[in-house]
Structure formats: structure tokens, C-alpha cells
Length: 323
Image (cartoon, rainbow, N blue to C red):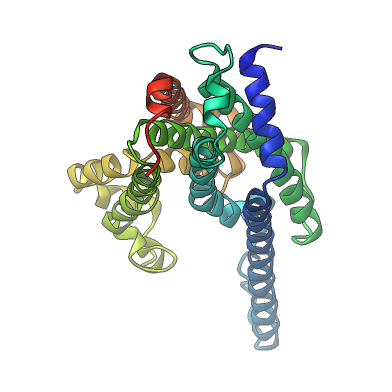
């Protein structure tokens, strides 16, 4: 086995014994299950309210019955995707930081560096190990949420739904590898371990919470629950005419949003899962035609993060004094 493979295997064994890792992933799984349950309960409430309205309408002699609310199973995953994009990214940073910090805190770094390992074996092994761990985690979460949709949400799934879930799982895996790789590189490059963690969290705050929130706040349709245009009963064609007058502003708003890698992950996931109404029940080819740019950007960003981590995690940087 190559030195990269040995280090990757070591990371897998370390994480298997890490209680903090188990707690974090367990918390993420529970939060995802709760989000599915809450979304399913919300739909049942809407359905009960609709049935009550129809009964009252019929009793009063009304004949025009509105369309019943329709459950699209994959839309129950909205909360789970949002938890993953926020908490998942944070947990990925913690794990990426931990792969470097533990070697210094445990005193195993010098022993590791004394071995005849290649120039890129240490960062490469750690990234491969974390990528394998995230693959297992995403697979477990995917299976769990799929079962939750059918059991808790009481919603049947078609073959195309399973394909959409699988695509979203791949997107999530790439996203998590990005954050873990970025954290490894930042920690290795920082003169102090504490500085590395702080910088990584600041980056997380900026690109996961602050920038997307600025973009959402700049969107006038988000200022009213359910959407401003929907509340005012403005038709889609009229909505587009209104927005055409603010094309410059909307371009700036969208530019702010897409500067965050989190928005790329969210838009891809929402589109392929049909959480965004525009892509709900649409063919995968149509979704891909609109979303391929986001997919390329997310993949390129992850490749850049891996390259950054491998490039800066050198013997010299790793041997800096702990502070």
C-alpha cells in the first residue's frame, strides 16, 4: 500500500474512534429527520385546512372547488438540504482542522514526518481519508432521508425520484470535501492552530451565512412570507415585466449570491430535487441545461481547495510551533 493510502487508512481509523465525529454526524442526521417530519406535518395541516374549507364550501352550496394541495415528496428534503449546507459545512471545517491539529496535539507529527513518505502523501492521505468518510456519511444520510420520506412523510417514491436524490447526494459530497480540504489548507498554512480554526470559521461565516443572507435580503420577493408577488396575486408574466425594470439591480443581487459556494450547492440541490418550483417535475435534461454552470463552478472550487490543501501542507508548515 502506498504512503498516501496508509495515511488515508489511519484517518479512517482515527475518525471511527472519534466520539465528537459520531456526535456531530448523529446530530446532523437527527436534524434532517426532524426537518422531514416538520415538512410532512405542515403538508398534513394544509390538507386538513383544505378539506375543512371544501366541507364548508359544499355546505354553503358552493360549486367552485379549488385545487387540492399536492405533495411532492422530494420537497420534504428542503430543510435537510439547508441543514447540510450550513451545519454540514461547519462540521466539515471542524474535521478538516482536526486532521492537522491532532497530529500536533498528540505529538505524532514528528513520528509521521520521520517516515519515508512522499511530498504529497500526508495532505493527500488526509483528504482521501476525509473524502471516504464523507462518502459513507452522505450515503447513510441519503438512505436515512429516503426511508424517512416514505415512512414519516408517507410519500411514495418513483425511480426518477431516487435518481434525483442520488444526484443531490453527489453534489453534497463534493460540497463537504470542499470545506474539509479548505480547512486543512488554512490550518496548515496558519502559524498558529487557533488562528487556522478562527480563519476557517470566518470564511464559513462569510460565505455560508453573511453573503447568502445579503443576497436574500436584496430580493424584494423574499420580504413577505410566501413571496411578495404571490401575496399580491401578480401573475408570473407580470412579475417578469416588473423585474425587467430592475435588471441591473437583480444582476448585482444575483452576483452577490453566486459569489458564495454555498449558493451554488443550494441552487443545484434545489433544482435537481425539484424544491424550486421552476424545476419541479421537470426532466433532468432541462434542469442540467440551466444548472451545468453551477455544477462546473462547484467542482472547480473543490478541485482548487484540494490543490490548495495539498500545496500548502508541507513539512515546513506542519512543523511550526503550536500556539
